[in-house]
Amino acid sequence: MIDFGPVYSGAELAEVPRQPGVYVWFFDEIPPGVPTENCHTSEHGTALYVGIATVKRTLHSRLRNHFRGNASGSTLRLTLGVHFELPLQRRGSRLTFGDQESFVSEWLAAHGRVACVADPEPRRREDELLGSGRFPLNIQGNPHAYAATVSRLRAAARTAARAADA
Image: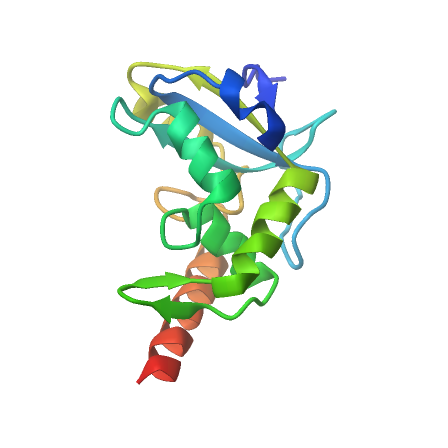
């Protein structure tokens, strides 16, 4: 078993390091249609997504944005929302789930836990984790077969939102 580091809930964000690093999202409930074969599992759930934080966008700020932000600033939130078939909407220059963002926040609070490790060079560790092909919700640099589906779902949601705004 890989040690992904301490695990946090949305209520424990104050404890998350304000440093660069790598984080892995675990879910005790799987979003509709997401395959879990060969994914890492632990007492916290199934690992579906890995991300990095930088000096400017630390673990604390990235995870706060995932737990409480919107689809425009969080690819994880965008990916979850399209799996729940939430309608993406244009809000100014941003695409969000509008009033439905609260659904994503509440779902993450109830079902998401995130492990993180401070690392001054997080890209290397993220590449290693993604290279395992065991994180279906990532797109970039991900050999998992489901990555192409995630990309198509997100593109279709963006296209629909822009068409509805026209």
